[in-house]
Image (cartoon, rainbow, N blue to C red; front, side, top):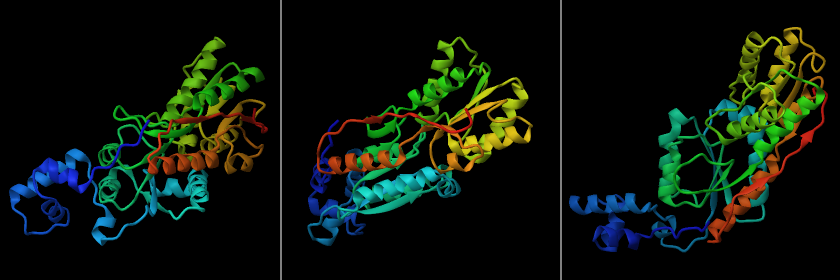
Length: 335
């Protein structure tokens, strides 16, 4: 995977058939430009994915000075989920010995997409790390068209150009969780998934199904979740209503697993005696339940550091390849 050279103002001028000075006036909203020339330059900017260079505007030569961490999630989830704190810590840690500043760009998909897209297209940052990407995210087009150096944390679900990414082996993690429940003797094993418009949700579910099918066990006890505590509570209630005989549950995040465990206990089910439980993340939430969660490790800090390293390499014009990190079971008392 190679980095493409960002288009220059000269490229825009050549595509539009105007002088560089005219193209510059259009970019800087100078009214002294014929409408036909303005339209030609605007079309060339869209075709080439040109973004204004702050250095050109200030007439000085500058080095890259900022990296944006883009999180397309509701504010309340970002601040409540330790995953995001670990991501920001890892990015900040890797940038500590560089002159680059980390900028947090966050917002809800429905409400803030246009604002975030304007920020990316305006050339305010030199590279982007995308965290928690969803299928159909409109920002994918902006990232591709601007040709910003971009790295995803988590495999992006896109039909367009390939992006660099760092991920954990979520499918193997789902297999590990199901295997543990099967080895414990569970036979009616359910799962609460992550969002099915994210690779993590899809792959963890696929791994659970792999192991269940190999063991000849039913795979019908599936309820969708959203990586939030409320999602875990609601999904666990639905599972208990539809499958009262369940004796094991793989929950695709520790936050959901902690909430699901509380719901099981409220329903009079002992964990792990009546229902065994395996989460995913091995974060702070896993140690706060009683008993502590048995869970699958998600190396958040390492993913963030490696994603930042890939981005720095892309910004230097180097070729990079996607990276997938291994995972493992972390012992607790719930399975």
